[in-house]
Image 1: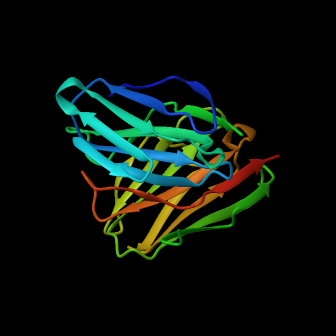
Image 2 (image 1 turned 120 degrees about the vertical axis):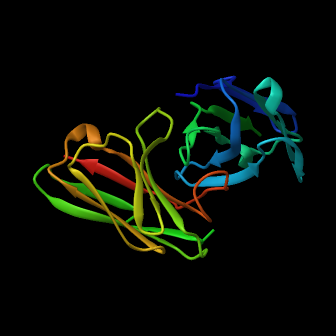
Image 3 (image 1 turned 60 degrees about the vertical axis):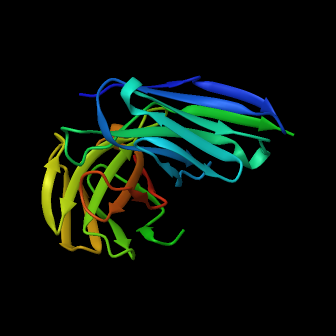
Length: 110
Length: 113
């Protein structure tokens, strides 16, 4: 199956700092999503971004499909940004299966 | 978000019990999914339904039995579970399978004693 690698696995920031999370994948994809999982387990949709660049407030994401990676940028981080960030991809040939990376655990300190 | 709801939110059951998890989506989607998230592991796909028809079964043990009576409701029937089945069970939906954004419910945290 497709491999999804996220880096870094853990990240600790001071409030106000910027950060970049990376997602590498091993095959062509037709779906890529970024999620934020809060401490209660809820997965919150951040971006649906199989290619290109999108921005939503302090967050933005870029996927370079030809080079098989995606980046999630968090600017001016806040304590409420803490949690686990997951990248999930759907391989072009795999139908409806979303494969998740292992996530980046982000802690933002006040 | 209230687009996808799950009940119960927490469940403790013994290994000989039978219980069911319920998922309901209010988004008008045609595809629904069950995922399992064990502690410190990424989500794993269990089942996929499209228009009430199971289209994928990801080698899940038979002690987990899904049911999709209509495109808005999805159940996961549990029986004779093992302690290693303790996990967060997440339901998701999307407009259709393939290349559509998936939306997740809040999950059911299951503990098997």
